[in-house]
Image (tube, rainbow, N blue to C red):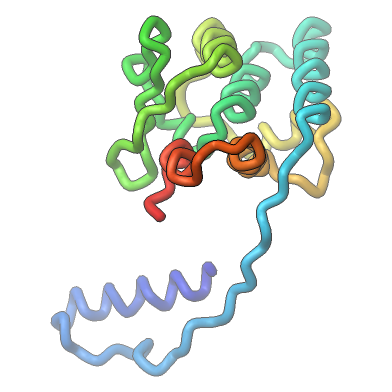
Length: 184
C-alpha cells in the first residue's frame, strides 16, 4: 500500500509541476497487488478482561492517569478509528443528547454516533480523564499488551469487533455502514 501510495503521490506532484496531462515517470508502473486481510473480531470477554486489567494497573500506579483506559473504553464501545478519537474535541461530545459528532480523517464530519449506555459510560471516563488529543499509538498498544491484549492483535481490531457485533446482532447493514463511517 505504501509503495502504491508513493508512486501515486509522485505522479500527482509531477503533474502539479508540469501540467495535468504531462507524462510522468510513474505512468507505466503498474500498481502492486495488495492482499486484503479479513477483519478480525476480538471477543467481548477479552475486551472486558483487558479493561479490568487496565483499571487495576491504574489503581496500582502502573498507569499514571486514566487516559489509556478511557481511550480503550471509547474505542471498544464506539468502534471508531483511533485517529477519529484523537481529533475529538470537547464540543463534539454531547452527553445530555448522547451524541458524538465524529471528525473524520478527511477534515469533514461523519454521521454522529448515538451513545448507548456503554458508550456513554466510556465517554464519561474519557472526559473525567481529560484524554483529549493525540497520543502515541505504539505506547497505547504496548500498555494494552501489558494488560493482557494479544500480541498478534492491533488495537484497531476493536473497530472490527464493533462492526461484526452489530452485524451479528441483526442491525441493518446500512446502519452498520453509517455507524462505522463507511461511504459504501
